[in-house]
Length: 207
Ligand SMILES: C[S@@+](CC[C@H](N)C(=O)[O-])C[C@H]1O[C@@H](n2cnc3c(N)ncnc32)[C@H](O)[C@@H]1O
Image (cartoon, rainbow, N blue to C red; front, side):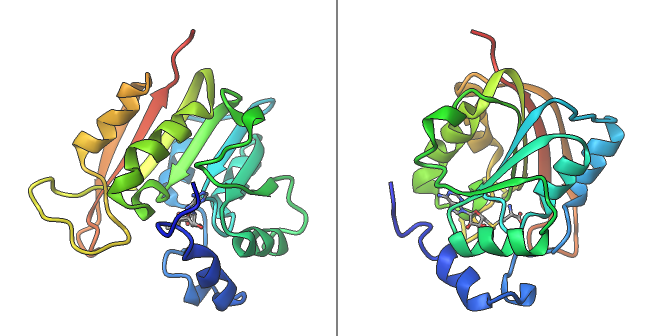
């Protein structure tokens, strides 16, 4: 499903040409919402497979690899993937160019941990349910899906994105996909244009 809702990412990464300041979302470190989750839950990924959706420059994938996971990290942008490999030349992460809307068949129901930070919200509402369904489909039975995203007030009309922060109502689509909420936590960063954030840990169903 190649479409204009996401074909602008590749030229943006290509134009940035190695300058993280030219990538509006590049931190460029692992997000604390992931590193805190790993530390607080004393997560040991040894022997477990994780996948990072829309991995961008790779920092979150590296944090998961440091926690012991065997990590596959994918992005639709070939320039982002090449850049991530260049940033982390010794990495154990398998960086792959792939489209979340056309996942390799071998990835379905395969991963112990599926991680997404800010990919869903980077895609327009017209594909929101599709991308959430694709993310859920990566988890093996009983596996964990960890989603961190910005939230919007459902009463507010969405200003032009991206990003298009999610509403709580939209997030319930993961439960429609069969996932159960294990834990959720909201955060507030008053100084940010996107003040409200949420981290939700789901579990995929057993057959
Ligand atoms: C806002 S960026 C977030 C990057 C990274 N997750 C982070 O938080 O720093 C969204 C990422 O999703 C990727 N992306 C967009 N559409 C995609 C698709 N259809 N399949 C895979 N990745 C996609 C973009 O190339 C971009 O790297």
